[in-house]
Amino acid sequence: MTDLASAPWGAVIPRRQIHERQDVPRAHLAKIIQALGRAKLVRTFRGAGGGVALAVRPEEINLRHVIEAVEGPIYLNRCLVQPGDCPRDQFCTVHPVWQRIQQLLIQELEGVTLAALAAPDGRCGVESS
Image 1 (cartoon, rainbow, N blue to C red):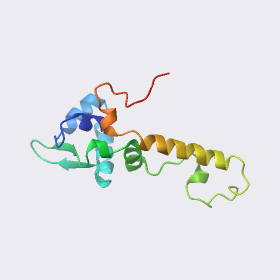
Image 2: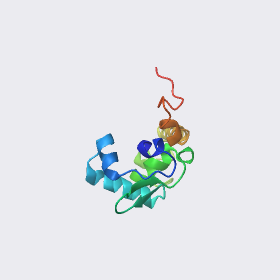
Image 3: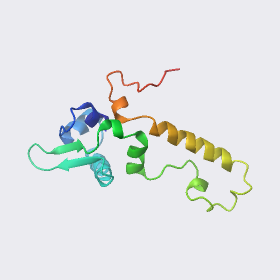
Image 4: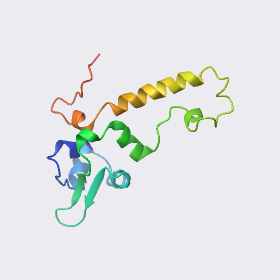
């Protein structure tokens, strides 16, 4: 996605180019692109001059969008998949901790856009430690 976000808006990037730059196996890349397409984050084009382009501006796509498009909903522990599914969540002392950590993770992922990741310094406002 950063490859697409780094290109001018609307540019169609050949799959082969993404495969070579990102060193992602072609079969895996095809599955990723398909998932991103189902989420309406990318558009695909066939034939000569075909490839992949962002369907949404990079400023409007965050890491949560990308991860959930490819992997599904984010949850850190199975007890957080569906509230009330875990028979222990009413008395488990760790459950609220998992909930807080998950919410913090989601907030961080929502705060990082593709535009920030594709910025020339690639730091997206994160300070190194």
